[in-house]
Length: 249
Image (cartoon, rainbow, N blue to C red; front, side, top):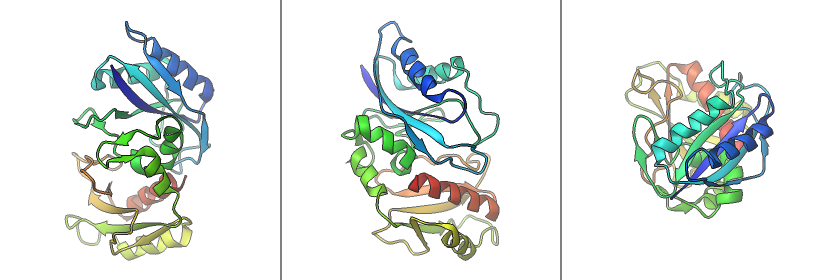
């Protein structure tokens, strides 16, 4: 039997009812009924200019005898059965079911990355996850989810910006990015020099067919690096603004 931690989110339609229905589906979707625990629902700021109204987020633990990849496919099937719609990327959506953890498993495939690469720095995910799984260990950082959430409560959060050497010349102005972010940011201090006291380092990479913009990097053991794949200066600014919202909630 595997214990799975999932994140639930949505901001379109009867979201809380959707959450309850999703957990019921997951509890009875296999021949062996699974045990499921649902957290309270939290209201969070939308991430991205096109995201629409504030979101509702929750977390659930589901015990299932399915292996991780089959469980992921079951999540996707439940989304579809409950009428998931997402017409615009980073736009309003009826229901998201994201697989965050499968116990201590670490999986790196084109279909599934576990633990979820953004789990450790998303306030809107950890706020609900710690309510029901605060003692769970993040298998790459050897820290509990409660500890990771506590780190996110520091203010300001110190984040360093770094440019990959593979970015074409004149694609980005790091100083201009930093200046713009400073003028509109509360809760985050953006620097150009990485320090041991930083919450995280953000590395900007050129987007490519293999790593398009908004894709996730494979998580590296014990590193606190957030990799963003960007097309140009404007795209980098949008992604950093979205990251700030994810960090601060």
